[in-house]
Length: 333
Image 1 (cartoon, one colour):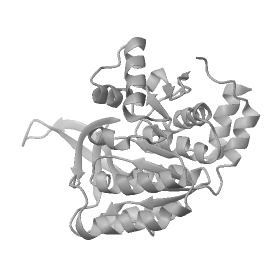
Image 2 (image 1 turned 90 degrees about the vertical axis):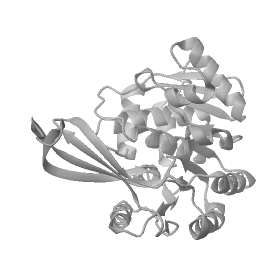
Image 3 (image 1 turned 180 degrees about the vertical axis):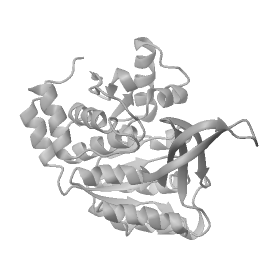
Image 4 (image 1 turned 30 degrees about the horizontal axis):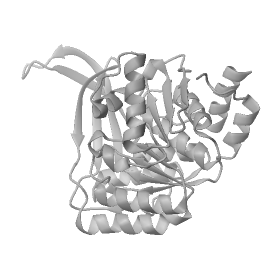
């Protein structure tokens, strides 16, 4: 089925309704740390390059980047996640405060480190990545505090986003609480999934895996249109979803709705510098647009344009309303 006949005016009005929407983001919080430099020699200690570091930067990753994307578009995200009690946790809090993200529902857990991914980059090429993390499911007091935060905050929200990076916050216990509450309220539930939890997302509004993730959970690689259709419809039926959105990089996005409608959205990106965090942008814009009254094709069309904006930047990035409107204007006028 061809893309729905959206108009710039109608979509601009939808974007205007983003402001003030309150959405809860449940997921794994992390800091993306970058060491930038150059390499001109091999270490005498081991056959590895020596990188002379010239600068370092950091940005929000995981569920924190989802919340930052929502805030950049004028929404009011409530972030429920876990950090350690270490200096890196304060870096995350400082970054959230700088972006105007509500941090009161973030739990500190002394038994686990704050997740940080350090990437060493020389001449624009990633050399190595080092991760500090715990992938164990939450338990004990930290789990109870997260469940309490969900019970307290979700009834005041217009949508739920689950950002699953497999670092322990998303588990059967947290999903049962969050999805159950959201369904009782009748609010949209958007999930950026992890393969290991796939069947726990049954009955949510929309999941947004990339084609590799979707193919993995369905046991079939996406290599052509026939395999795409089999994986997309199979995933939608397996989880009894309102729709499945499969992101396909340079091939755009494919939307499979419970009604039987199929929509393909070609990529709008002209320049691609870094796809890091693009999935965070997609799930945040889809959920926000649904909360603002959009239907699924409209929400995914907006997310497609927002993703086209953020992948022009290096590292995780966000999309402001005027940038999104600019992309829409270029495509529809």
